[in-house]
Image (cartoon, rainbow, N blue to C red; front, side, top):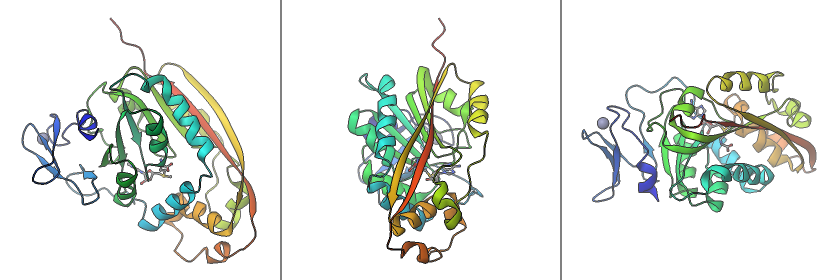
Length: 284
Ligand SMILES: C[S@@+](CC[C@H](N)C(=O)[O-])C[C@H]1O[C@@H](n2cnc3c(N)ncnc32)[C@H](O)[C@@H]1O
Ligand SMILES: [Zn+2]
């Protein structure tokens, strides 16, 4: 339930607990009286002060991501994320954080398996409009992952980060002892067959090692697995894939029209790294 998810949130101004009020309008209000109105679609914006310089994903990028993911091309990946989250989310009252939730697609897959309380953070309000529709039981919050998270210490059982920025110190702070952090990243060669013709950015070598290094300072053990699968995509799907990722910030709508209108199918391979980190157990 949304109110259970709200219980782990903290006011970004004074850090006291937030609670949900639905009458006469949906708001979050803290113990000191700071009030955050819900957007019409149900998400909340907790980013106060001047906006961040970060360029959030646009409405067009979010629409492309939604179309592509809803077609089920990455369902093998969603199923694996839900399987890995199971360790931490089986007990009643469990809480999951989806950092960089985007359209909420992977969080939905997890919530279909476990009725956990859920928080979805993303800097793009266009993404959160979709996420709030898909996951109305989650607290969907506009937030910048590089800032201290507006969440209580040791309040979360599992954090998932799927192709989104990572703030290891903050993930370690909000996770309960023994909690699970699941990080999904693309590997070198991901979608290589289509990358060159769509302006997608190549994945650098050595990224997996750097991830393990930065996480190692905050987390106990790590397991890491590679997941590869073949994709057969239409021209429109290739264009959507290019547009939904970081390259979408540089591409103009219509720039991939030639690719989208291609009536044949294109074969390519998705290559992911799925890393699981454990928060240290409680010390007595
Ligand atoms: C490639 S998308 C992945 C979204 C989602 N996890 C998925 O896989 O469908 C990256 C997401 O991270 C969000 N994002 C990027 N930088 C962020 C930041 N500093 N704070 C919060 N969200 C951020 C973007 O708005 C976008 O929704
Ligand atoms: Zn406050």
